[in-house]
Every structure is written in C-alpha cells, then in structure tokens.
Image (cartoon, rainbow, N blue to C red; front, side):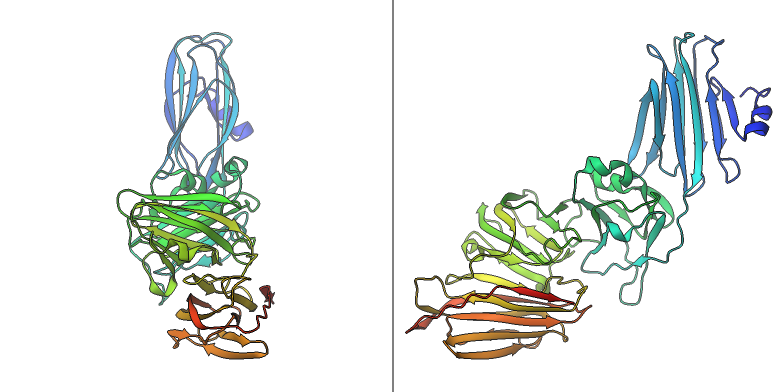
Length: 484
C-alpha cells in the first residue's frame, strides 16, 4: 500500500485505498466498509499480488470492477462456502458481483503490463442483518416441513425452533424445489442465505445446485433481497430412514408427463412437491398407466415422510397389482415414493377425473386436500364418487374401507346407494380400522374438517357383489370443495 496516498484518500472520501498491486489483508468492520484498488499507468512492471478480505457476520460484499486488460493479464475473484464450494471469477473486462457474507480474495496477475491495461476495483460491504420478525418454524420427526417463498419475506429471516414435541435432532437436511425457470431467479436465490447454528453455509441457490445433501443442526434462512423471491418451496427434514443421497425432490410436472423412477443400488426416495398456489391441493394429482421393469415394489406415502409410516401409506404397488392402482387420485402438497429396485413409470396429470366408474379390484385412497399437514381452512367435500364398473354393466359392488389415519375432529360418512331412493349411511371414525359396505351400484363420501385439523387418509378396495341391478339408475356427482 502506498502510504503517501492512504491517509489523504481515507480522510477525504472514507476509503481504504491501494495503488496497483500490494498483497495484504483487509479487515472490514462496521466503521470500515469500503476499499479501492487502482492501477498505475506509470508502472508497467510485471507483478502478481493477492488481497484477502475479512467480512463481518451478515455483511454482504459488492465488488465493482472497471477493467480493461489485454493478453494474459487478469484479475481473479474467489470465494468459498461449504455448500457452494469455491466460486472463481476470472475478469478481463468491466463487471460487478454481489458476494456471500463471507471472506474472499482478489488476485491480480499482470505478467505483461502495458499502458492500455487499466483497472479500478471498488469493494464495499453493507450490513444485511435482517429485521427481527420473530418468524420461526418447527420440524417434526417423521415428516418434513415445507417453507414457501412467501414466508421468506424481503430483508427478514425465519429461524428453526424447537418445543417439547419437536426437540432438536442430531441433524437435518435442507432441499429446495423451484416451480419456474431457475435462470430467472438465480440472482434472487443467491441472495437468500442459509446459516447453521450461526455459521454461514451457502445460499438457497447453492442448496439447489449441490450434488450432495446439505446438512445442519439448526437452520436460519435470511433473505437479503428487499422483496420476496417467487416461487419455490424449501423442505427441511430430520434424518431419513433411507440413505440421504438417494432422496430427491421435484416439482409437480405438467399434464400428461411420463415419469420414471429408478432404483439400482438400494431404495430410491422421491418427493413430489406442489407450489402453494393450490396445485395438488384443490386439484388432485392423477397417476395412470403404472408399469414396472423388473420386480420392484413402489410404496407411496402422503407428505414428505422420512421413514415408512403405515398411517400415511397411500399405496403399495407391485408388477402384479399395478393395474388395480390405475387412475390413482392423490391430494396434498407433497407425495413420497419409495422404490426398492428396478424401474417404474407412470403418466401424470393434474386434473379432476372425468369418470367415476371403478373396475373390480380397483384400489384407491380418500384424503383431505392438505393431509398430512394441518388444514389451512375449514373444508367440506361432497360426493367423492365410487361407481360400478361401467355404464353397460349391471354388476353391483362392495367397497372395503381401511382407515389409515383420522383426526378426532373429522366427520366422514359413506353414503351407499343400494337402489333408487334406497341408501345406507355409515360414519367412520379413527377406531373403525376396516369397514365393508353393503352391495351397491354406487357410493359417495361426504366429509368435513375444521381449520388446523390434521385430517384423514382412508384406503379402499372395490370388489364384486353377487347381486345385480334390476333397474339401473346412475347419478353423477361432481366433487366440490366448500372452503371457508
């Protein structure tokens, strides 16, 4: 550093200041927040130097480079984070960077300096400590927590907390699913920082791009943008029963998408997550044409579960029974698929069914739209319809219902249409682990639950009845939500 210029520049302009090239350490503080490096047009000697910058916690560096370099002359900016690795920027022309709130280096390499090689490097740090909003989240032992982008407001933070029912675990994983083009929001996600027990680990973009699972013990998510960045969901979970690395997350796909899941070395775990904009919650996910290559087994669970849970199991599908699960209708923000081995494929659509006929042997599930997470609204759903096999048949059906989970505040009725103007209504509760209907030509379910209820999951199987219809009356009911 040229001592002649430093005190003058600092006093007049508040800058620390260095001419051309001088290896040194620069410590930023709350009162020392800027530094400038200038080329010297009169010094054409070859030189190499390295500046190491130390940054206070929550201070975000900005590096503006007005550069014109020729040949092999270059400036290199480097910064390392645990989740993002080393990010290296080789600079030969004018550009600017906003970095993570971490230490970084600038290397100047001028092997053949000419009068035309010039640069001005302006480094500043700003305090990005978020406002204390008091926003917190809990993580349950058996199911991951979903944090939506609208919960991570600009210039604010959201902190992981614990209580008696959800004590601190040994470790947690953090994942992110993006519901739009990642290139549109790269910059915004890079400015949302994740801390683990007070130590910076990386940005949400680093979490997205990481080839391994990002782990920690207590997360804080800090949005240094002045606004909310749309549209994504963060998943934070306790340790999985299955190995962490085979656990992947994906956004709900487009209609008529063919999906594949492969397990080659132990089970593969796949979370399919929908956005907070009602996809998968009020419009069901339909899975059709399920088929296997190999003799694997696919288990599907409601929610982003971390282990096998019978109370949240939607289906167990094998090559032998895959046809019985065609037109599988699932509600909810997150579904978990666990494949033991081989390859399974299906066709996905996000739509209401157009037919309610059920073939003999068909299996399905009835669940409220938020299960297994707390319902955001009071909900009444009428006419989940299960009809006889086809329009041209007179074959009656019986349906066996299996209550996997049902909160005490849920009202759940099975209305069994025996024949025209004759029906039987049965109420199911959590204690009714299994119920078999009377012989009917169709059945429909009416349920209601209050806000914050954890809801219900009921599996069912359709079987043939020995009786036939004398006169067939078919009533079509369209499922309607009444959400308050």
